[in-house]
Image (cartoon, rainbow, N blue to C red; front, side, top):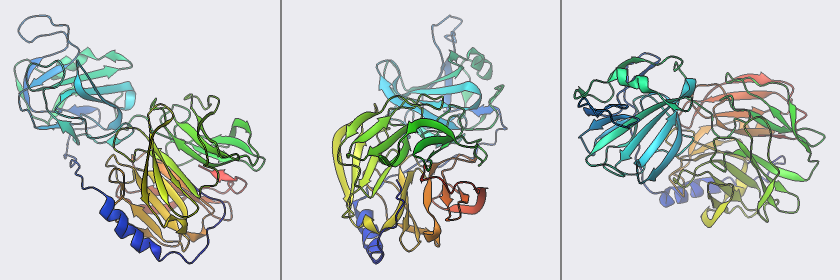
Length: 441
């Protein structure tokens, strides 16, 4: 994802050509506009419009029914909204639920939306807001008619109290407030994908110390980080291109690194600040200029890896969701040897992996993802030539937007808060003791 030595100057003119080329490669796509839900904190909104035909354990006709959710019937083809702010945990299908998605919320809550007309809009790791459209009402799976099956879970168990927010055979309107307070729900967006190594919901930072130790600096979710603690033993100069990811889809942050013999290694995170033993997942990676991970660049809900060869050619390696690759490799373009840093992440909260790239002249570009490609580059900053390290693509300050961390030659690290549209706010000093780190990720 980053390099410690600067690339040669003189090739920046290719950026404009590359931007045009990538724009032509990118397919068009649309996203839902977040609804303006006026519910106070701790209250969900109705995810769909329709008539309440069944509740938890209640068939709504004076009969018991072995049923874990609320059935909101009719209105096929109409929008399904996220009931509350959260992070998409699952996007899949089976014979019972049909197409469904799960969203994880603060306080241990999870909501499920089933029988969708087609695959849910957003892949795992995407942050969504209360009232934001996530799919369309359908009739898939074990379903006799068009309806939304809506479940709420708390700490791994069906939350039957949801029944108190619904009245059998009444009509509800999507986006309106469910008249039920959820204790502990409050504000927040659930877990932080890709860089939460400790399981506390806050993004952390990996560093390689001067002696080669891989160390962890835990984040507090407010833009600050603790002192470094050792995560793995001495690596010396044997590895580079250390990147964060959730490469096996278990919502625990993992680590990818290139070994000096060219082997690409995958280290599965255990969610408690440690890692399983590394496994080889590829060869010929050590000499690449950049390795970028931590995002879904194909739209299949699995995180992928991007590599940039010494000649500037960029390739997309499709992840299989279980810590390896599918074998499919897609060439995305050429001319990327003119960049000092490339950072992956969802910088505009649309569920698609984007790139932030800093050129050798210090210009910062935003490349909006479009599944197997990127739209035309947009300049979002100047003066980024001073940094000796740049990382991010995750939320460090708790506002549910992807941020950047940049280190100066003096060892100062600044947080650039993402604004959710590929741009960044005013920098904030994080610390001044980062100069001894060989790598920051």
